[in-house]
Every structure is written in structure tokens, then in C-alpha cells.
Image (tube, rainbow, N blue to C red; front, side, top):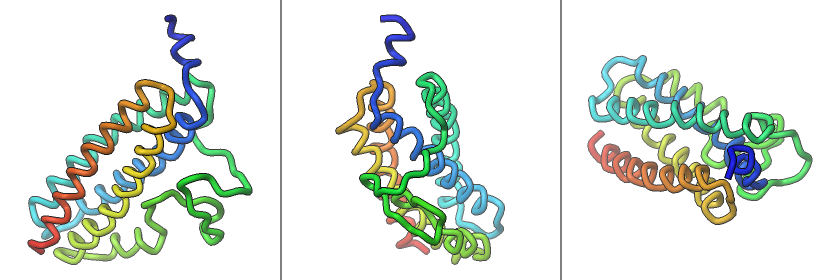
Length: 173
């Protein structure tokens, strides 16, 4: 098969997965950056934030390259109807993906310090990762593009492990 054939071998689920995972991963990196800029954060929590950034940065570049290859926008078009796996939240100006933090959540993380910040980061990132796992499982079930399905499997595996780690870390704070 040619590269053009492979690019054509994608479906709407692949596009939705890539478009939804971009802002989701971007927010995880933003949350990690917020935590890493703080003082008095336990080393285990700092190491986890570094690990999340290291995993999700390259995935963002790959997701963007796939969308470009497919001739699709990097942002989801505004729609007036519910998308599977998404919650409508009128106050946010449209759609909100599973596990995404609100502006209030992000402000709370920004304002928190020390152990409180570490605890809040872990609690928020568990919810954030659970949303990503749900979206990735939908891609595994419905996606067609082999590399996107493979990334989804990796997200499920790594983020499930990170959720377990975060739950364990919460018991130590």
C-alpha cells in the first residue's frame, strides 16, 4: 500500500479520537507544568508529572500529523448535538470531554501549594486519565487507522498503570 492508501484508511472514530485527545493531552501537560513549577511537592509526584509530560508531548505531535495527513482540522467542529462519550456543558461554550478540568479546577490547582497541590493534582489527574482511557477504549472498538488504535491501546495500558500509581501516592500524602 502507498502512503496515500494508508492515510485514506481512517474513519470518523479515528478523527474524533485524534481531535479529542489533542486538547486532553495538552491539558495534562499544562497540569503537570503547574505542579512542576511549585515548591515542596513530594518527589514521587514530581516524577509522575514529568513522566506524563514525556509521554504525552510526542503523542500530541503524532496526533497532529495524522490529522494533517487526513486533511482534517486539529479542532473538532462545533456541533449542536451530543457526541458519544462527551458531556455537553453550556457554560464552557460547547463541548467538554471526559476527564477535562474546568477553569475553576485549573485555578484551584494553580492556587494550591505543597501537599495540597500534590493531592489535588493526583485527584484531578486520576479523573483526567479515566476520561482518556474511556476515549481510547472507544477508539480501540471503533477506530480503523492501525497506528491510532495502537496509540489508544498504549494510552489504556500506561494511563491505567499511572492511575494505580496515583491512587497509591494519594495514600501517602
